[in-house]
Amino acid sequence: MSEQQQVEVGWFIPTTGDGEYVGIAPQRPASPQYLTEVAKAAEQAGYEFVLIPTGGDCWDGFVVGSWIAAHTSKLKTLVALRPGLISPVLAARNAATLDQMTGGRTMVNVVTGHYPQDLKACGDPLYDKHDERYERTLEFLQVVKGVWEAGDVKTGGFNFEGKHYLVEGGSCQPAVLQQPHPPVYFGGSSVAGKKTAALTADVYLMWAEPPDWIESQIQEMKGYLQELKEQQGIERTLRYGMRAQLVVRETEEEAWAAAWKILSKADPELVKSKEKLHAKTDAVGQNRQMDLFNQSLEDNYVIAPNMWAGLSAIRGGGAVAFVGTPEQISDRILEFVDIGVTSFILSGYPHLEEAEISGRLLMPVLKQKLAERGLVKQD
Image (cartoon, rainbow, N blue to C red; front, side, top):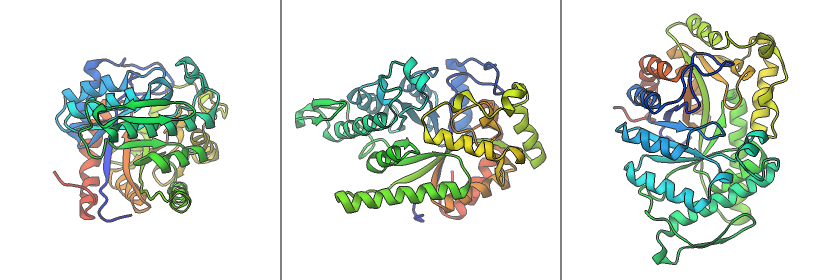
């Protein structure tokens, strides 16, 4: 990893509701007031940005992003969106508008989607076509970036003809504030996903896995970047990010007790079962998460020091958690930094209290360790 590359740490905005437990209905419905509280707590804790998710039950990311930006002063918003649900030109304009209105505090997370049932419920015609969804995502990002770079229509605009999109004279008004454009975060563990990321992403996102698994993915991505250079003459670099849950306490015993408490109200049979509804997917990344869960059954779901896959019993997506003391978790994060990860998106249940706890316990220790390496700006 380049010594010049700084590490960023972000939090998560729970737009589908929040609570102390998984496996039951959210105890706290999403509301403008509650999401504002979480965002302000994240900013106060020292997080640089927040991820605003996308999905069938999520609130609109651009609207939430504008609301949060209006109620914070420095916090950046990483707005997730799906290519199948919005045109690329409109997405580019929405992001550029938010970028201008927030003074450059906008980032974009493009999510191809991985649950066929959810995709179908949202009206995505490619709900059951995995590789074709990534093919569309590639075109989507080519149009988004092309429109950003083309600027307004006076330049002639941006033209594109592909399998999924036809654009003639596409323009972006207002122009983006950040140059060359807001950072694009993108994840996908399949070959199709990784090749799309190599060609279009600024940050390649992964769900948390043991260090050797993550290092293997990074090396694979570097291989695709080299392939681009050799076969198409395209030379690109990527940053690497990781999405993880967080349970940090003053002692390790307290941390593990808090982690297991999150599962304590879920159906015990569902927790033990290897058949998970959220595992019924064509997504390679989700299948990797379930492999970790099933392989660690006899070890109380511990997959590496201070890393726990227990939440995969109930929830999908990035369910692996860091569990431990501030020193332990900081050291685990540094292990990932050493193999090339420079962006971390953390979250915990409930998101308001865990932002406050992590801000008090983890962030001072982590930022000090990063500052000693010259990898983060000190306030």
